[in-house]
Length: 595
Image (cartoon, rainbow, N blue to C red):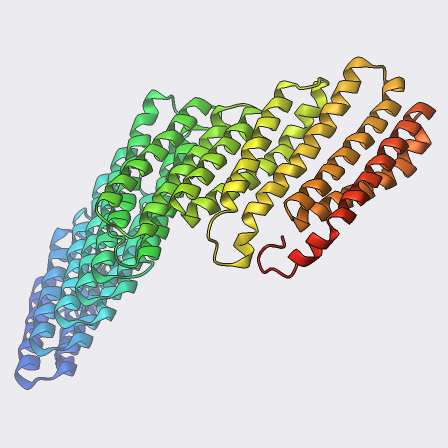
């Protein structure tokens, strides 16, 4: 058979005694004979030889004529790809009949590479090339399905995606190209789900999602495509209980959706509706599916739901832009309402408690994000503090630890916002009890209330038992902070700088002393060691301030005032401490009461 192949080639290309048509027909008959003999003698070697000869027939015959400068006798047209397709069909049948998956892999690889060799001759490709690659990829996936060989599935992905992406038969029609990628992706996911090939499904979904970057389709079409391919992988992951496959599909489709949004730029609000609708559909596919299937592998499914909400929020920010604050606030509130409604549904259907808590946490997070978007300056920490107090109240009534943790987190956000952002506003106002100061005072009260309620929860670890006292300590520190800035602003308003400087320092010392004394008294009355030591520490700092700052800068009357108030309160503190010393010493032996 090898001699026959070379003899026909030599008669056509070297000696010119055989025309193109007889040579082509003869080589095809040799290939067919090889297939029959391979089946008769059960020989994979004969089958491989005949297969390679069959693919080489049109290449060596047509390529020689084109290279010799004559008229091309085998132009690249639909008939050539049909011939390749027939060879691949024979390969599929013989491999399936004999169980030769390696032979099938060799034949299908030759089917992928033959058009690449044709492309190297600079001959034009017909539109049928894309159809050929699609049929060949699906045939390879079908063979992998019937023979349960994952290597064939990987070969279908590599051949179907990379060679088409490289330009061999790439269609200029974006919809055709998108459909081509989508069909291969969906087929690969279905085959992978059948044989539990998690890696094939993830690779197909990631590649199919990212390849949308090479097409120029309408945003709506792109979002629907991503929803279909991502949803297919998501369903397969749930049915096969693949962990993290749904997360990978979400990240791949989310990144591709972000590229679509960035390509669209910043259009007018009316033209944003298709983008918003597309991202919403993609978000609902992952959010609803993972939430409603969270009875099994609850933590992993809910992590996907959380990331889906974060990706959706980021996409909305890209679409709307930072300048559309009202629209962003409405979107955040809508996201919170959505998670509240879903939490009611899963609560009624007796889902795991973690599912309800995560949904409520996402709703609270969305509201927390909406506050600084919609409100301004001093209203932000106030709204956050009220939200934290409400969460603490809910945790107190339901004894829910997750709500308590959320309340503590919001409280820490309040403190961070006040120190970093609101302090310049309070300092620049120059008024006693300004609007920022009043808002901060109300936030401090809400924070203290939240700390009190959180402290009553049945925490399991010693670290979490400090959340309630920690919120109370933050409230106390912010109250000290507030008083200092109010005093500073008041003196800036009512007196000249030269006069106000000394009086301000003395008044601050009096405020610090009173506050430290109050902490000591509260710590003794309530048996809170943390408050006692904080008060003692503040009194020590005030002593240093009086001797280093006040006595050096202020006038005589303010020096006397600072020393008198400080000394008197220190005496009172020592008397109170000595009077209750025995009770404090005995309480230290009681477990859990010494805080």
